[in-house]
Image 1 (cartoon, rainbow, N blue to C red):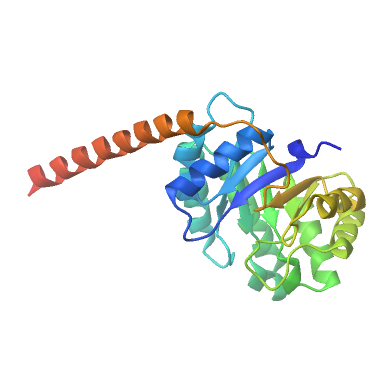
Image 2: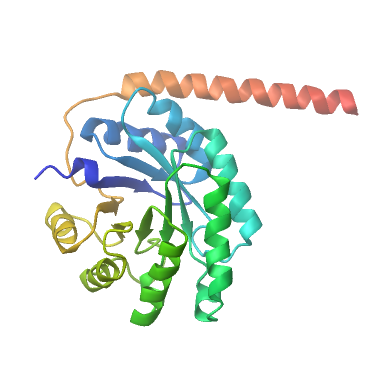
Length: 245
């Protein structure tokens, strides 16, 4: 089975460098993955690297805790879309959910959804922090908000996806949204099992499929143009500040 189009190739480490992002995008192109998922600081670079390919650029907001203000999530989401993101992932506000303040959970999601227009929205539940009833309630709220995807985990908590959680989520949402399994999926066989039990997409930081092409030369040129453009922006900003003083 070719699972390339089911994979969101992910790099969300705080220490990820620009060169790491180039490699991520390079491997995504080689293997024809569905998308790359990265922090918003690198959206513009990834968009340039993936130009004229079918690989989408996805980024995260309110990450990894989900406890930021809704306004902060909205601002970050809008900026990411302006920079070229094709889709947005947001972490649900776990504190609101556990407080049973379901209205605020829904508003948090809806405000981000409205801010990004037609771009797909994925909501991360962080299942390791929730009991079964909370998972079901969170899924129900996501359905009320008409989100496109519901994702199991951020990868920054105690545990990632589980087969049990996927089954509960699938039974709850049926076909009303897609499910992304993420966390602790590090081999091809495990990825297949998650798809078999109900996941529609696999998020992974491990290249489950080995490519055989090289795009490093092309990406190096794009990266150089990216650096030059940002250097020019910095010069303009500096000159503006100097004139003001």
